[in-house]
Image 1 (cartoon, each protein chain N blue to C red):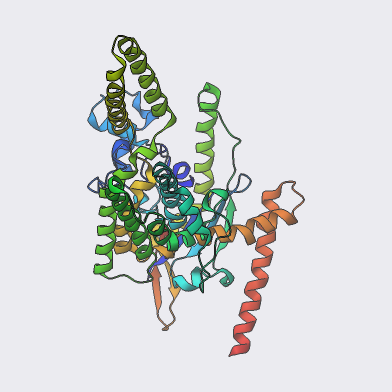
Image 2 (cartoon, one colour):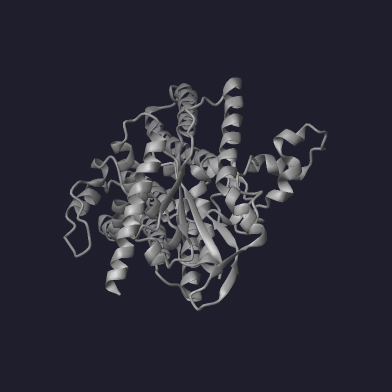
Length: 353
Length: 106
């Protein structure tokens, strides 16, 4: 969110590279990094000065080149400013999406109840937070809980999907592999140190996620696509009703089965055309590996610590203020506290000496 | 030795949009531990009320908001600009004096 505002992006535009919106869901890595000096002539306010419209121009339009607050500063490379963020991209982003897909998947195959049962029966374990409610009963998820979920989801899912029926075997396997790759990616991203090998593993897992994600495609259907599917189905049924009246009852049954197959096929066609994985969090994962090579482990710059600071620095200050011109009071109140804490730390270190 | 100023912004709730300052030179375990006072509240950015997408007046307001934000950041970064140009001399722990440049990170 804040990246959109600060870098002057369009939503669904990557802060690091020039990837177009329709390729966010693929594992495309070969796009140029953003270079704000190059965009200068294409900015909206200069546009009217009579520049010819060309390919670059169109591209810039898609990228959403607004005002980037940072790009004019010295010794700042604006495209490097975005740092991967485990909390929002993985825990509250992809894990959340993944659970939505899983829910659809389990529902389709009638395993939802089994999943909830296993989920609630998880045994306690050191450093593991036992869920008290079934997944669907929880309305709001915190980052910590989602991280916890990442630890146990694979096992739970494997148990819930055990003993597949004949036609289910392959989809189950694919779903498990997709979830497993994502979870593995997340686990390695949490490592406190990396070698070229572990980074290679990460890239490998990400590849796997992208190869296997199609199994969940039908659960990413938007309302608009769903409406379209429904409309089409109605139309087909109406056409057929006319035909069916003229056919003998014995043939009707066979025709109905054929029709249903055809309907399903059409539905899948529409879904494949309209549904996609092109959302920004899917793309951001592809920058994780490069970030580790360039700047070190991800936890160093992750968002948890800033969110933690909100509590002591902003919310406590807000509570102590009289809500009137609160910003000034928040800054002052924390400034004073900080000064005293620093003083204490100094005294302590003097004493230790 | 480079001085990496770790500047992080986050719009947490609707009321406050803080800008934090952290020093990137500190080891990450220290910098990221909650009790270490390593996160310094630098400023609170102004937050505009919610705007609709379509209306013309709101479009203009949006532009004004972006300009305001830019100005606030220019104010924040103003002290850094001179230093970024010419560097600043800082005493080093081994007795030497070093010329340092700030490097901004997000």
